[in-house]
Image 1 (cartoon, rainbow, N blue to C red):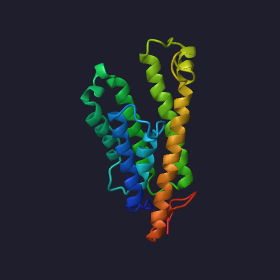
Image 2: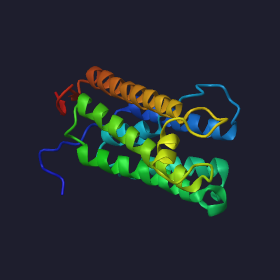
Image 3: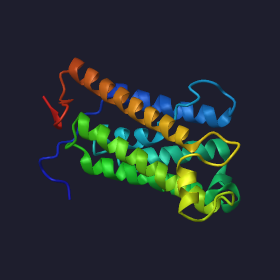
Length: 205
């Protein structure tokens, strides 16, 4: 049940445009794997978490995760959801997105900027640990013991970029994209004389 003191945030167009542009970039990257535009830009956890948190409760929490699935299926086909196409790992990834969006929906009207960024950080780290743990389980190159799991979370397999670099890029993307969304939200709210997100408090006039 939603507490009566949790106010729904106003619909602002600047954050919405940024989220839609990010979804478009995801589609372009999937369609053109060799594209060099923003090669390390992968703020998808921030998109579902901060995107969900900044939009009114009338927009269901599952909308952004479902849009990510839709973009991936339109670009790669439904095979990505089948065992042959690595469907188990994909489903775990989408479940993480859905979990982040669900948590953000519970925080709507309660979180300020600091709590939002803390939530993004926690979700991004959890996503990394969960998805890499799944890779450790299914990838035959990893020894199935504690040392193999630590290897999966840090250096990865020989011949590939260390997995910690993916964590670094994900954290930079998620935190940077969240800051961009929060700045766009508050800038438009200020221009339209609407409630803004404070640093340590919910939106207030």
